[in-house]
Length: 98
View 1 (cartoon, rainbow, N blue to C red):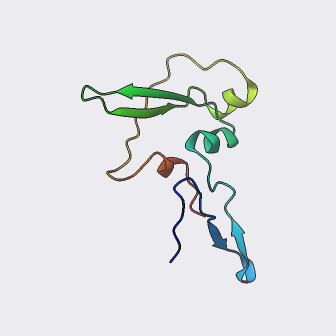
View 2 (cartoon, rainbow, N blue to C red):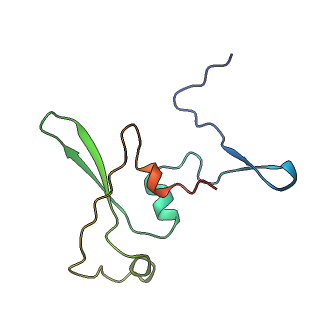
């Protein structure tokens, strides 16, 4: 039995053609790194609740085309709140489960 250090990220492999294994290029990346790698602008906000629990919230202020062109974000866009399930994380919304 081996013990893995908490700061080590395991390599995540997927079976490829003819039984070969490929390493997921997103393994070990944070949500911010994955979103930025896909070409979107992203903001991180820390929110402290009344019971002093610190939540990390993310905001994508621009569409993909606005992020790529470097133009300003369009005004008056509606807000969308995505809430993950219990015992889940924001990774659910950016993972590609190939």
